[in-house]
Structure formats: structure tokens, C-alpha cells
Length: 440
Picture 1 (cartoon, one colour):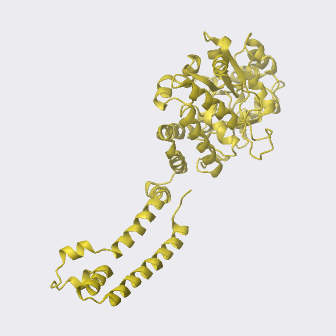
Picture 2: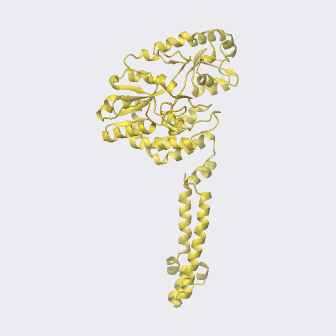
Picture 3: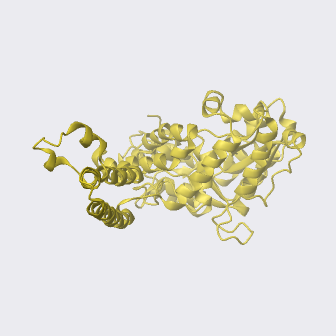
């Protein structure tokens, strides 16, 4: 390992737990330039384990909405602004998709566009991806499922096929004019700034989900997932003092301001990114900073095994992107996989409950059908067969008395008896349905 390097939230916990990083607490306490209170708390917390600090924030990022003004003008749709809810977003994207007739779409994100895409919607709805203690999944939380249901509507009505998105990438589809909107992280600004048709691009804050219905974006209703790299040093370095000296130099305020001045990235030091939009002359990217003042910062979901469950999550959601009716099933399976449910537990806790409406319908109709069985017994079993009395149902008995013996009154009694039995069993099954059948 090198002496000094960047650390990322995807692997930070694994590195820290395995004592691969140098503890910086003593250096920080003696430094005149580094006070962790001046850095974004969420980014600082990513690189903490217990009381130990293993990295100093290098930068931070936010997510904003980029839109193609030319496409909006072509289809006479109003530009996005800070008043947009996610429903407004959907209506605009659908209007463009409908008018585009297969050549232009309103929006596109792939399964892997999580931080810069659908994770923001999940948190706007009050859901979550990973619990704050990094131990359990929130993909089966009711609010998460509500957000994913909305995402399914976006996928079905406003996006190209998943295979098209996967093969080309949502960014490429946007810059090539196939889609009118894309949600992107600040780390990707330069891609759009240097695009051939960048003069058509503009940025806005993300839409919000009006959870309480008061018509304004309250805290927690317009979220941006944010992340940040950290400057760290190897635990086994032969020059820990020199390694810290370099980290300290990179992270002190004046150099944090410098990287923002140059348009490299937004700073990890709070208040050091004000000059960042000036680095992109001719394009207003202030929406990324506005997401901090007008929105809620949510630390990028992570755990010790982020790369594992993130890959699994993407693979599982491909099916839901292709068939949005399976979105809930996919989310529930993701939660079970992250939480470590065994295949047997997944079968009885997920598969069987999801199939329970179908199982109930089959059981009920088959029981009623069995009680009404007639033709098979009538054709196969001769009246002289000694086994007849052991296999015949009520209906053959009714037929024999009513039509063979001509005793229709006695035969009708069997029909009424059969009706009462079916009614009794139906009532029992309907009561059982409330306990054992799951429709939501």
C-alpha cells in the first residue's frame, strides 16, 4: 500500500476493522489547521470507527437534475425548478416521452444509478437503503416500497428499455438527445460541461416528495445522497509523521478552497466551495450547492460489505426494470439477501407469502371442485363395484336417488346438504385468508 491515498465509503469500514489505516486522532488533536468540526459531519463519520478517526474529508458531492432546454422547448414543456415535486417530474417526463413517440424519452436511469438516481427518491419518501447502524436493509420498508413503486411508474412510462439504458448509459443517452432529463452527481459535471451541445443543458435542484401535503419542500422531502473521499494513510507506513503532514496540507482550508476554485471538486471543508460554480464559465451549476441549502444531505448508504450488496442489488433489480410488476418482489428479496436470510427462510418468509393469494385461490376452488365431483366417478365406477361406496361424493348420490330411483325430494336433500357444507367451508377459508394470505 502507498503511504497516503484516498479512501472511499465503499471499503472504508472493511479497511478500518482490519487495522489497515493509520489512526489520526493524536495528529488531529495537535494540528492547528485541522478541526473536524469544520468538515461535513457525514463525511467525517464515514471514516470513524468507535472513537478512532482514520481519514480527513477530501471533498463532498451532491446530486442535481440536468435537463435539455432544446427538448423542453420542442415539446413546449415548462423547465424544471425548485417547485417541482416528483409527480411534476413524472408528468413532464411522460409528456415528452408520449410526444417523442419512441425517439425521445423524458428520463433514464439504470439499476446502478443509485447515488445519482433512485436512492434520492427512496429517502425523499422517508424510506432507507441501509439502517444507520449499517446492519440491516431497508429495501422492504413500506416507505421504500412506496418510493420504488413510483420508480416503477417512471420506468414504465418515461424511459427507454433497460437494455438500451444498460448498453449506452444514462449520461450518453442524455448528451445524445435521446432523453430530456438526467439526475447526476457533481463528480460528473465536466462530462456535460464539455459536451458538444452543452449550451442546451441547464441544472436544477432535485424535485421533492410532499410527504405532508403542505405544498412546500420541508426537511427530509428533498434529499440528496452525498459522499466524499477521505485522505488516509497506511497503518504500516514507515513515515507516519510525513504521511500526516501531507494529509494536513491537502485538507487545510486554503487548499480545500483551491480545489474548488479549480473546479476539481466541492470541498470537504464546510463553506470552502462557494467558488466552485465559477470554474464552469457559461454553465450555471449552482444547483449542486443549492441542494445543500434547500435540501437534506443524506450520507451515502454503506456498510462493511457495500460492494457485495450493491452488486447483488443491481443484478436483482434488472428484472424489475424489465417488468415493473416484480419491483416489490425484487426489493423484498434484496432485503432478505442483505439481512442474511437462508434460502429456506426466504422460501417460507418471502416466496410463500408472495404466492399466498394464488395458493389460497387454488385451494378454495379445488376443495369446492372436489365436493362437486361427478363425471369421473360416474364414468369409471360401475354401480356393482364394491369400492363405489368408498369413493363417491354427494353429487353421484344425489343423481342416483333423484334420477335412478325417482326420489327427487330425497335427492334434493343431498343438494341442500352439499350447499351448506360448501358455505361452511367457504366461511372458514375466508377467515383463514385474513391471517394467512398477504396481498400487500
